[in-house]
Length: 309
Picture: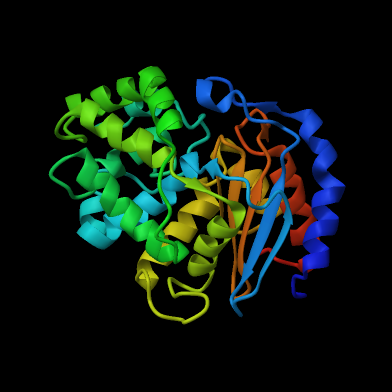
């Protein structure tokens, strides 16, 4: 395994930019439809503390499904493994992340894993708080600690846009409420979930979060514990098995690092004992993953021998 340099990141991002022509910006969330596919950025946050960047690295985006890793970490910290996995499973799915089919087939309707939408809704429903504002603040407090940045917040416009169009997620939530997996108000849950997905970061901030997981839950600079080792391990395992939607198996073969993507075009990747990487490119493939991000991680993983397999 060879060390990352700023030159490496810049070279390979420039090399894979053209792949944006092979994807489409997500348009089913109106506020994301206006993203420009030519905007690309990457950052690598080393465990030594250095951060290398390339492209438009100060550009902010919503993390979308990457938030599923962070809400899972929070639920595990607050409730423990037994409670969390009584309401969500541990197995990967070959169905799209928005599918309701497996909920109907599984008895008693427990979602397969926390990285599909049904599972993420079940996990978010577990976050402590007397109302949706308190629940969102619990999650933001954790993320700000991982980023070492108190300015992290969410994009109100994107959250509102998702709330107004989240008909399928409401269907998933009501189906699970019927089966006792989800408790309380579905609309309050949707309020939390849409704000969770609309949390804003740039690649430098997201790479730092990834570096915490790469460092087994410890701050990449001070080595102070930020999340328990067991929680970090569980989250990384789900990133390997389920993190790239129904492309996860192919990604594990081609890249071989724990990673999680979001339909905004962001990907967070964890390089064991090295650091965290974040890539942004809003043009998506058919599975909902950034085409530029996938290509960049393939090139770097091959050159740097990052695969954990």
